[in-house]
Amino acid sequence: MQRLRNVGLYRRRRFVNSLVLIASLGTTLFGLFWLLWLLWTLLSEGLRYLNLSIFHQATPPPGGTGGLGNAILGSIVLTVVGILIGAPAGVLAGTYLSEFARESRAASVIRFVNDILLSAPSIILGVFVYEVVVIHMGHFSGFAGSLALALIALPTVVRTTEDMLRLVPNALREAAAALGAPRWKVTIAIVFRAARSGILTGVLLAVARISGETAPLLFTALNNQFWSHSLNEPIANLPVVIFQFAMSPYEDWQHLAWAGAVLITLAILFINILVRLFLKTPKSRY
Amino acid sequence: MKTDQTFEHAMNTSIQRGVFLDKLFYHGTRIFAWAVLAVIVAILVSLFHGATPALRKFGLGFLVSTAWNPVTEDFGALVSIYGTLVTSVIAMLIGVPVSFGIALFITELCPVLLKRPIGIAIELLAAIPSIIYGMWALFVFAPLFGDYVQPWVSHNLGTLPLVGALFSGPPMGIGVLTAGIVLAIMVIPFMSAVIRDMFEVVPPVLKESAYALGATTWEVVGHVVLPYTKIGVVGGIMLGLGRALGETMAVTFVIGNANRIHTSLFMPGNTISSSLANQFTEAVGEMYKSSLIALGLILFLITFVVLAAAKFLLFRIAGQEGSRG
Image 1: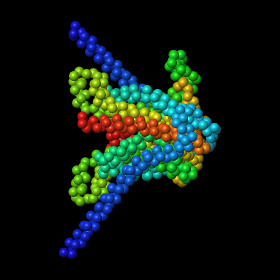
Image 2: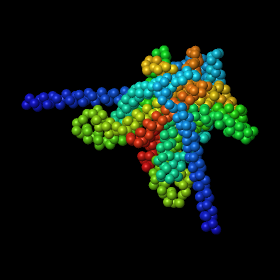
Image 3: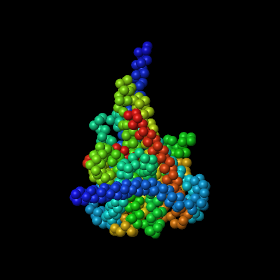
Image 4: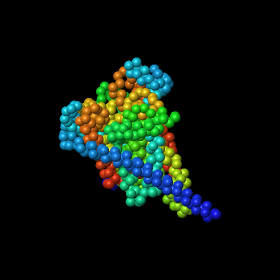
């Protein structure tokens, strides 16, 4: 009798278990289904409209022919300037958190705020830069766009820099200090060098993150139908062009939007894969 | 004798220089660390400053008013807040179980050979910008959803009492429900990566002990993994919620941009971020712009609270890791 009950219990436990495992497999397939569908449409639609003229012609008026050249150039300019502002600031801030203020109260407050900034809605940063820069300059500008992107890159770089510097063993710092090197030299010549690939990872991931950001550019860099490389005026950029063209009723504009979307995605995936293949990936991303 | 003195002198200047550069380096890095704090304070101050005219005119009534009329300059935040919350709730209802299942699959079920590829695939998908999700939703998902799924849903569920009202109305493809589903698809990679990382924190010894006692996989997850990681899992979910609340592009494409609250989820609506994305550059007049900034302030405060709670929970599990593991 006891034995029979045990067999029944065992069967029920096995049954519940396989039910849950099937559900788990099901959810994984469900999740992958959407994402593969998305990638498939993106590639099949995007590659169809991708050709050489996309790279060297400016965005067309509706009905005209053209490419995305000015938007690609603008995006590169915005991203480069954004990362040139955001990355050094982020590396220095991360250095402070890891090397000088590790367990202090101030460091934990800054760390907390940094993590909030990391996940804060990017559109808010756009509103902020609009309030602080665009209103005072009196017009939209590439500089404002870069600044908004820098503010998004900053927390990513702070976080990875700190994590990576913390991985450097203290014995290295002590050895350098014992040889008489001042603190700044220890940090720059020893710690930075040991954590070089980690810091680079953080910067590259920040590049990948900001190159697809759309919301903060809507009211900072705006858009520009023509070639422009001045940071003092509105500048064309891929994400905003994609947004405007995709929402438009013109079919040739929508085709260009697909081509732009596939370009951005490939660039971002390329950076991410590069980082995973050649560099140390940070353990935590949030 | 003389060489000794010059040597000593050189030593001293070198040490002094080292001390000076040390100070410079220390304060240099410190300024940038505090700049992070300054940024968030500056964001709050500037949003408050920009929102002041609207908040002064409408007061707390701004939060519960459904008005949005640029002509008469009468504005309220309720429709956008409602849209933000409803789309995020839909995203969480779909996204949380699915992410949980995926994390479970990767950590406990998946053949070792597939573990890394699936993990990397999910991390890569989390890196795809949201505008791509939005665009795909607008061109591919919404038309199919409107043609095939919505008519079926409203036919089968639309007649039920209570729930029926949520699923009635014309099948347009775009709308609050579509936005919520797209949001779910977008946060799934992120949330499953976070939950998987949590599951992997559990010391193998604990799981192996449970398996050795004859527990099934589900029992190990339910009685060992989940109790060990529950705070962190909740933290990860909140992090996903924070993303969903503030997400702009994935939603803006498919929400329909209409300032009305409907009982039906098929109808178009608005979220705070989509209102900002659609109207901010075109807003003329101080009150219009100020009301939009006030919306931004509300969004910032909501996400701040959610993210702070998430950080608090994740911080607690990080503390546990040291003492228990």
